[in-house]
Image (tube, rainbow, N blue to C red; front, side, top):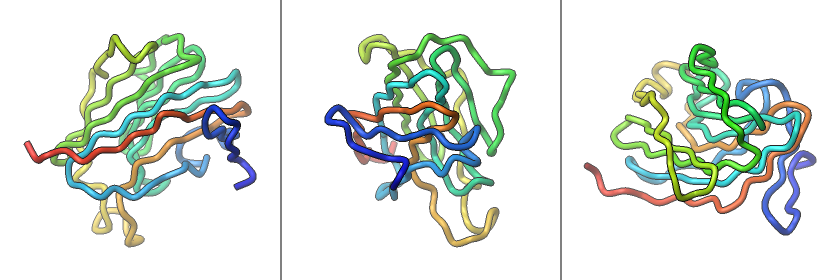
Amino acid sequence: MRRARYDGKGLVIQGKGSSPADCSPLTCIVGDRDYEVSVVLDVAEGAQGGLLLYYSQRGYCGIGFSPTQMFTFHCSEEQSWMREKVAARTIHIRLANRANIVTFHYSSDGVAWTRHPWQMEVSGFHHNVFGGFMSLKVGIYSAGSGEVRARQFTYRGLKPA
């Protein structure tokens, strides 16, 4: 809890580590098979933050942003070949998980959305693969030396397709 505080505008999370694997992301349990999650992140200099589906440090996927770049994580590794220049001091991120197929969108203004070019399949993110009797959770991460402010977090269950 020493890393998180509410500043009147959102939840500010101090960065830790260098990636989702070693930063102790803030997670919440998912209550639906199909769901959509969105959040607005303000990313400070020196920080990297994003939205994940997180089983453990060995099993996660998601996208993240520094003030200048977008990062893609799948099977617990950054897919460096997908790194893109994106000016992202404030970034809107949305993920939809429909029957274990995850789609990400991002926007600088919350109006004009860009679909991430890679869908991710997460049916293998469970105990039989990784052990530990965990569950796949939604997570917000903050890595690096700066801070990430999370605001306007929403979760909603979707009707199965």
